Image 1 (cartoon, rainbow, N blue to C red):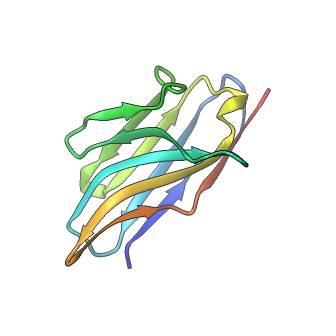
Image 2: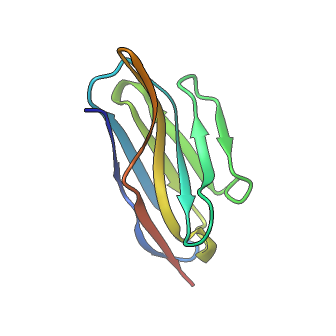
Length: 119
C-alpha cells in the first residue's frame, strides 16, 4: 500500500524555524513531483512548494525566500525547511506526491501535520 508518511511540525514562536519531512512508502517505481500544501479553516488548500525529481522547484508567493524545499530521491523523501516563520504560516501542512505503481498513477496526500506559529 502506497502512503506518504509525514513528520515534523509543532509549535514555534514567530521568527523561528521548523522542518517537515515526508517519505513515500510502499511499492512504486516513480515519485514525481513531490511537494507541500497547507490549509487553514474555511480556506482552500494552497501550494507551499513543489520539487521535481530533477530538482526544479516552485514556491507559493507568501513563502518565497523563507522556505526551502529539497528531496532525497534515493529515500523518496521530501523536506520543507521553514525559516522566519510568521503567525500567518499557521496551518495544517499536507505532503503531496504523484506516484506511479504498476498500472496506476495517482495523486497521494499525507495525513497532515499541524504547524502553529505564535506571535
